[in-house]
Length: 417
Image 1 (cartoon, rainbow, N blue to C red):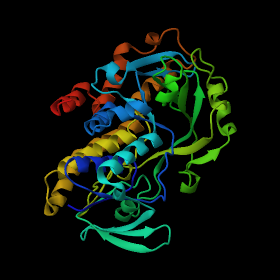
Image 2 (cartoon, rainbow, N blue to C red):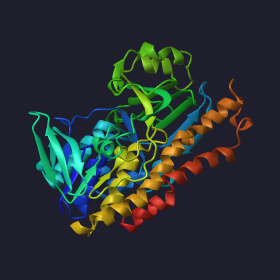
Image 3 (spheres, rainbow, N blue to C red):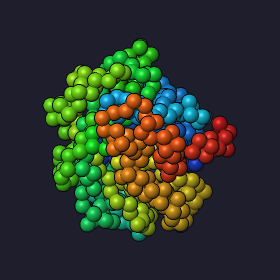
Image 4 (cartoon, rainbow, N blue to C red):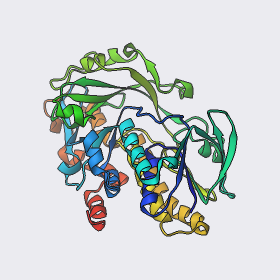
């Protein structure tokens, strides 16, 4: 079967590897001229790590990322609200990894080149339009602006939140939906905090800090590469696309965190010692009624961009890839539309639930409960919110995003892992 993937991000590369494992050899067209390890930190949930493990990539992940031990929730005074084990510590057969997004992308790219050949990924090609019935995509080469048309039995658009293919099918959708929150992201080399493998959420709905270590190499040296995200409520319209991912001075937001001196982390120092800071609006899009049209479908952020709450963006793209690869396994070209229908029926409602759950703050809601009930802090968290209530908030989100331990472990055991 002839398959084209538009986009060599985490979703597109994962799909290529999973299709290859099922006897298929797709071609990937990527818009950038040279793929580089850009970005900051992300988390890959055990449900997605399980799929990468089945591709034989677990050791490569472990060599670069941090196997997250727990996630801790704190109020704006650094007082502890709730901690949950993560990955193997929680009972999964595989870890949760905190990892540099660019390093994960390059890891996947290297595996694609090794297994499918260097010619499987063509860079510098911008997708302009698709013909879903004919199964063709119009591509513009960035180097000389020439336009060509490639045909395939299946075209998968994994071209991100600004997907040109999605825009073709939904031309009136407009800009992504702005949450009213701005994120400032950077990394700082510093001393390990808490257990050295802790992912931290601190603050409340209108002001939050997320931070976690992402480098195995530095951890082995007794240091920590700390990925951090500062978030503030900044009402208004969706910022223009050209303003996304721009470098800004720390003075834009740092004063709001000037008093966040915790016993276990000095936040102003973390910000001050950090590298360049990049500004992003926190955005998503409303769930779509359908992803698939003829021989074309959407995957990852092109299909379901979501708020970065609960660490699910990359993980859900990997799970999309697994579901689509499964749907295509053993299918001949005439059966592609039916396979896409199966894929969409599986993944669209699941990801739509996550998009909506993240708008309700997901597991981060425990911080808002503490803020509302004890804005000046507390002597003990259980004076404010019971353990049963904390457990219930966490459990509801796990069920929505597919993080039930036994379900993930059963997947691995069924595959002989």
